[in-house]
Image 1 (tube, rainbow, N blue to C red):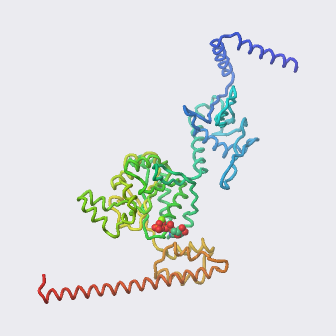
Image 2 (cartoon, helix red, strand yellow; image 1 turned 180 degrees about the vertical axis):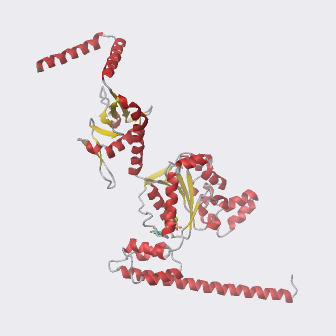
Length: 485
Ligand SMILES: Nc1ncnc2c1ncn2[C@@H]1O[C@H](COP(=O)(O)OP(=O)(O)OP(=O)(O)O)[C@@H](O)[C@H]1O
Ligand SMILES: [Mg+2]
């Protein structure tokens, strides 16, 4: 039997060689086409291939990556031969199907087969990019009676799920704008802050988390009302109340990238627009200390008055621009209208699903146009530490939920103002000898010192006010006495 089989194969090979040699290419192509038609007439299975690289520039196909992630999560565990991908930063090992391996999947009761394959080039050529030499592809095989279900629903299901897994597994990035060539410089975003570790009143925290969740779920709603899918948050409060920490917690909660925009490093409005267009969706665009980034009040005055008004504005001691170096002032020509266009201009709609977050220590210094609802949709006050916030910090830093000293701390917190940053600093043990009680006593000391300072400041203020009143009274009487108008 073996001998018969061998001679049959030999005969076929001879036939193929003869075909290749004696048949002209056009005739050969015709024969091959009819041969495939004949095979597909008897073979009820349909095949769809998804290549790793596509297009003119052989870019890595997004569909291929999505399928790879889908199969890794859903079917690869059933494969006999797996491939372990290299991983960084203590991330779990990624096991995917090895080449030429096959796995079965099921969708609405229909059986589907996926196989992982590699294209072996006909001739060996030298390339600096070995990956591109042997591109892989996934082959999907199913019975032709399920063609509609697979092409209209299953493939979409695989791509959607795969995309969700990609975004879940991807390493998030923190981008900062480079002042030299105005490009985003990426770095891996690994901030440990979460809403669980953020000290804030629980009700306020829950409200913000619900607001964020609602935003992410409202793609259709935003489309229906004709608004770009973005939301503005204004975080304001004194230094050390957790504004930057809140942004990190938001990014971790939503799994978004962060674009930290340094406005003083942006040359003009055109550059600002270009930077915005380059941001991806599912991201938070942050401008920290917005009051120090632009002479917003000055620019508005300039629009209404002349240049002298602007100069007067710049002469004010509390003008944040005065704190900037001459070079910074000269290099940034971003205007308030440029910034407003940045927030709600037509190009801000490209990509969608973006948060724009401004932080400031001085809410009153900002132009009302910049922070009106619709631009900055939600204003969040980051305030001094309350007892609820303290309890969360104590749980995080000292691993305690109750202590006899909590009563004293609660009373002091209601009498004085202290930032969560100061509370946190006191709760960190400074040496091995410092136990929980020592840390709490450090905090009590800090609170008492803050209380004393506040009382002293109030006394001084009252004294100053009294003196001013006295001077005014004397001046009023003098005017009456000497008949001065
Ligand atoms: N609400 C908070 N919850 C937890 N930790 C906080 C909170 N606020 C401040 N901290 C701690 O204090 C440090 C400083 O806080 P953060 O940088 O977020 O303050 P900020 O409001 O952004 O200050 P600034 O206005 O100076 O930028 C953080 O690293 C964090 O450890
Ligand atoms: Mg900050």
